Length: 465
Ligand SMILES: [Zn+2]
Image (tube, rainbow, N blue to C red; front, side, top):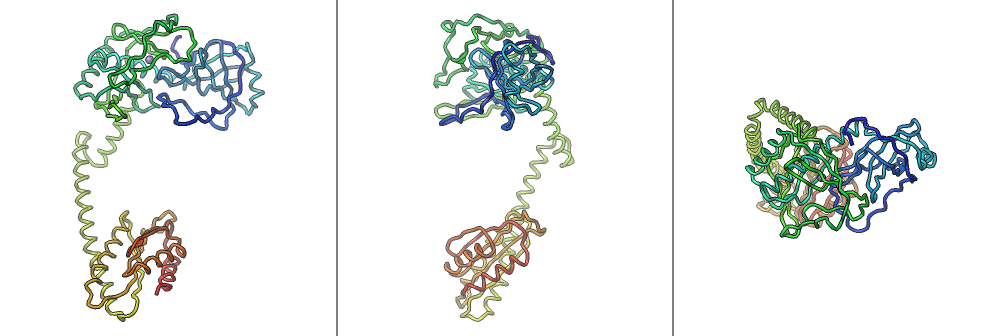
């Protein structure tokens, strides 16, 4: 099949059907390595089988093509193609607000239609072919140079890096060596070709297993009834059964391996993922990575190579600043507590001391500060000459009033029952969500904090005696 944008094939149709949403799978969903496009839930979809097609059905780790079918002067989007037995089923979106029944008329048995890999479909196909051929090349080199079988691979959704899974982690030197070997073959422009052989299931070698029992790759699907067995060759490098679409040569297939492997822990065995990029995805990766790096460099007013060092400095500074704020907060908490204790001491000994203190604080650790004040009060009150009963409500809200603000509240006191009563009251009256135990109760409420909230707290405080 020639690989060109706008490639069309004239074909006729078998009886179409209206696509019903697939039934919910029972139990644990099967592991899927191929990402299929999700069909729009409100679209009417026909399932159409053609006598021939230029659109690739999902298979062999390669995702489906998308494209169009021209029927009776109308262009119908093909959202995905799946293989059922030996046939490719096209998921055709019904257009122009036709009913499924009206649309079926365009695809009656024997109707002459044209399937086309349109511009968007072609771009998608080039990406898939590039990465699929890259995977064959990469897997062949891993096998021959390092005796590392490919356990599985994933042609991930654009633009994420694809990966192969190998039985162990690889060193940076090993990865660099494989990348060098691959790009030597790319430089030579090794040819890739496909041979279709008559399918004889008996003669197919069974799927191998690693010592740990993990299958190496996958065999031909059991439901495949296509009658032919395709083998993809990279001259002098690789020969592999495959149903996917490939580039005609390794020309221009610059292969890039991310220079590390990620260890994955599976039940009995540890495997590693080696990520790779090539073609359009590699270009996008380089562009976006460069943009991330240069915008970070601009923020730090430094050159690109200095970014890691400067970021390390910023992180260190930030840690030191956080520590300093914590130290100063704990010092400040003691002063605020001291003022409260002085006030408490001036009040008559046999009365309950009640107070609400509202603060403004834009930090995300406002509650920690309120807790620090409450702890300092508890500490100080235990040292007072005469024991006092008290309940305190501390609240804190951001300086700018906004409906999305999170306001935090902390309740402290000299006995459990009153703290609990106050917390319950704040829940019911001010709508604060929270909870507590013993002498502490904390909560939060989303929204603005205005006089109404202050009045609510005062009202609840008044009920506690
Ligand atoms: Zn393949």
